[in-house]
Image (cartoon, rainbow, N blue to C red; front, side, top):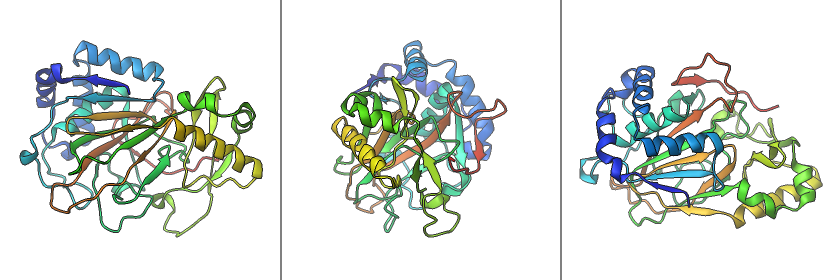
Length: 323
């Protein structure tokens, strides 16, 4: 597990958070610009760890920041029950950390079809949520590379925890291709490399159609053959060729074998390398008492992805399926 204890920097991080606009959604681009300036003043050890992760990644495919400032539970609002968040909601510490740390890494990005085109997402249990949605709770949210089917796929998924589930059973599962690749037989690695495999898309990107089918193509392995990127979604990849089916199954088995469980607690920020991992979430039981699990999520794009040079943090992009 790749963990960085940030508790020694709590006072400095609180001071940086205090520099940010306290109603972030009033003018999110301006908020993120201020966060970018604050990111330049992060404690040296934390800044170096983020820069190294951004440059080289890690074998495990994630970086967990622990011990960041967070409100006491009784000082937090009730866990949300609807989205998007109110425009006048005051800044929370975890949102501030996502702003500052995220701007050290790259550009916060919203997706027009997702969560009312917002950039900051509250992640909370919702009764009757679709099984592919992060709002599920009592079923497994299966392994997926976030938006692997999207031309403008985010480089990082960042999850911050304001409130854990009551029993602290919920785990974010992460499987890294750097750990899994040696377990995939060479013949299947060669077969999957740069090979387009049909892929369906999440409900938000279906344009109102119940099931438009596999409208995208995803390459499960691509980039440097010795250190490839990963495109994977257990629910949505739809291989048709028998050889593709066999090879994807071998990749799935390898990812299962290297899975790590991360139990997020208040004050945690989990940074997932979305080009080299797949992630999932185990079930948990909500109590619907206003104190259920509450995470915050942002997507970050960097120069590694499809940036043209004119983007700004807080941009909202349209869906284009991978051809």
